[in-house]
Every structure is written in C-alpha cells, then in structure tokens.
Length: 182
Ligand code: GDP
Image (cartoon, rainbow, N blue to C red):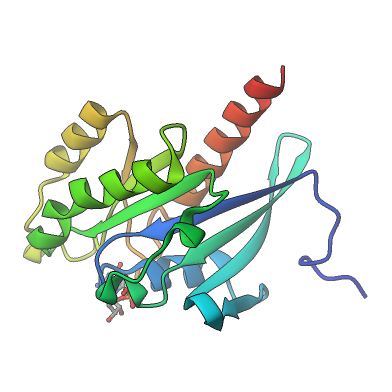
C-alpha cells in the first residue's frame, strides 16, 4: 500500500536547515516530520533529510527538508547541501547569544550558495527557556526585517510554532514559484 512518501504530489520542494550546532535543528525537523515519515540519510555527504506532504490550497506539496547532521561543526557544508534548495530555516538558540551573532555569517553563506531568491525564515528556537534568554525577540525580529527575512520564535521541545514555521516557509516558496510560472 502506498504511504505518504509515495503519494502523488504536485510539487517537490527542497529546503535546508542551517545554523550553529546545538540550536535545535534536528529536533525541529523530527518534530515536523513526525514518526510516520521517513528519515533518510545520505551518508556520502553527511546530511539527513526528511519528507512531509503538505496541502497548500488544492495542491499537494512534498517538502524535502535537509539537515546538516552535525556537519556544520566541521564547516563541511558544501554547495551540494544548498543546491536546488528554494527555502531555508536559519536557526539560532535564544539562550545562546553566539548562535545569534553567527546568523549573519550563515546568511552570507546561504546567499552565496543558495542565491538571492531563496525564502529564508529566521528562527529563534528554545523559546520555552525564557528565563535563560540571551537574545530578545525584538532583536531577532528587527534583524529579520532589515534583511527581508520572515521571523518566528519556536520551541521544538514544547512544540511551539514548529508546524507554523515550516508552513510559512513552504507557503512562501509555493507563492513565489507560482508567480514565477505566470
Ligand atoms: P542541532 O545540533 O542544531 O541539530 O541541535 P539538536 O536538535 O541536536 O538540539 C541540541 C540540544 O538542544 C539537544 O539537547 C536538544 O534536546 C535541545 N533542544 C532542541 N530544541 C529545544 C527546544 O526547543 N527547547 C529546549 N529547551 N531544548 C531544545
């Protein structure tokens, strides 16, 4: 019997997760992809990816989301990671200032390898740890506005805004791609 993975879809989008090690990328992805979806891996380039089918209007979109699987630690992310990606979640940890300070560096890399048209959502993860907060929400939001990015705070642990952040990215990709086709 065909499962969600094999279901016919109207579009296939690739998107990537990026950001410092430990900010919660893998947890965001597994929360979004849930147990019923496959977590595949490409050991040759040291990344993992998961699929999830999503309805936007009457269209079925298969989102293929890539995760760095720890390779960002070694700066081993290469152009193949970004190739063909239409969107990115650029994640920092609201309790780790350094992860926020590195956002500009990740953004430069995203734009270099992924192009200027990529849909980028800046994500402040671990918002459940408000008592240890080192980055104010307004800082993240302000930076995102300046750079023309979407912005959201999430908690992979408490499942806050996880669905929403992926949906926001996928819907924007869909809108942009559709307009381009007109
Ligand atoms: P990655 O290296 O960016 O993929 O980060 P991981 O997903 O492996 O998470 C790093 C650590 O942060 C793990 O110990 C997670 O349990 C923890 N973590 C991830 N997301 C959250 C969150 O939203 N809230 C809290 N409190 N911890 C989180």
